[in-house]
Image (cartoon, rainbow, N blue to C red; front, side, top):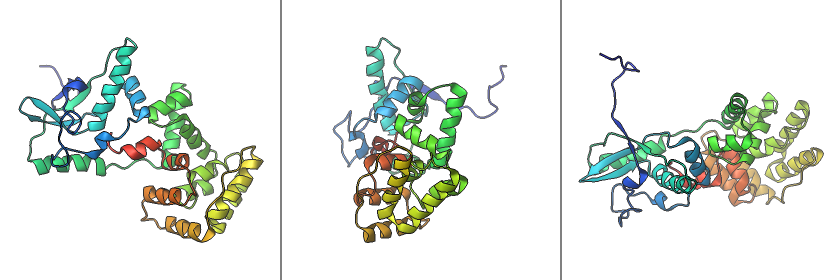
Length: 287
């Protein structure tokens, strides 16, 4: 009797052509009345995810149910859709298409399976941005790859990887300010070329002066480091209220970034770098 590779119960999994899986709302005419419909299936493709799948394939298995002969996707719709796009490109390049790992069909009522789909997405929690930065640096050191390849692996842009790595050049006091939300990762990254003592001083000025002079202080640091000045900031009163809101630990960082974007204190690129994501990821949700 052969010994199992892992001393644990075995679960059935299948390798399926993504074209053979049914994504409700894309492969069918169903809408919100269907328990497995999700509006995000109509969002644009996430280019970084497509490129990642072309290199690594679909890593995380999806959940499905059987409806007669159809295999309907319960959780993992965007993985399936992005795998289809990856395969179109791979085939055009004369390469082998990828398959999607699929767990054994899930049984349950409509509302139970709807709960499974919600749970998979809503229970996810990403790494702290400094943890992501450390992982990116470690990956590049271990693999010898550059920022472009690292970006594919993490599903972000090379610019984001560059910003993450700058955070590792900050002193511990400034890194703590980033982690606590006192200062944005984007603004902090612009201080990385300064001596550690000056980094902390500039960061303290940003926090003390409020969002209006956050950009002014960052511009001074950027000019000293040879960079350009950011665009003008909005009114001081509104910005200070948003910065004060950001100091509350219970505030969702995605909500806060959205607020700062709305008042003009952050660009779309700033938002993506602040959360460690591409903008398409912010819009795309489930993968």
